[in-house]
Amino acid sequence: MKVAAEVHAVLDAVAEAPPPAFSGGGKWEAMHGEMAGLYEIRVQGGGKNHRLFCILDRGEDLGGASIVCIDGLSKPPRQAANARDYRQVRRFADEFQKRRTVLE
Image 1 (spheres, one colour):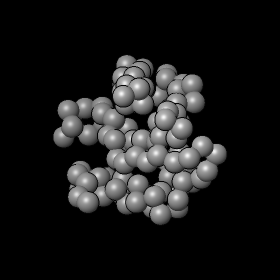
Image 2 (spheres, rainbow, N blue to C red; image 1 turned 45 degrees about the vertical axis):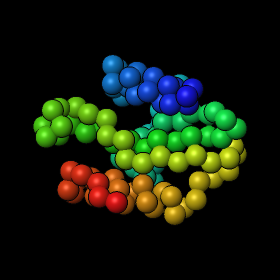
Image 3 (cartoon, rainbow, N blue to C red; image 1 turned 60 degrees about the vertical axis):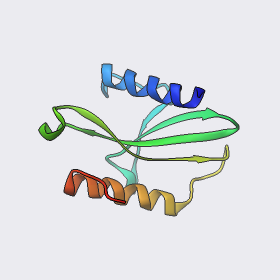
């Protein structure tokens, strides 16, 4: 699937040149406000915008610097994601930071 391949390409590029060295070209963006501390991969395909939410983590329990993928969503172009979806992402991110795992 083209979308999955593009997401993997962004993850690989970030891993090779982590922020701030990796500018992202609009496909890797730091989130702000209540979502601060998370990053968002943004790709388009199949008439939708796809988002993957990630944390950059330096925990030794992960073997050093890591990109932790927390959650994702797809939405129609030019529409905001549902606030409920963002709250879920934030919950998962907080749970990962606290427990070093995410239990749904």
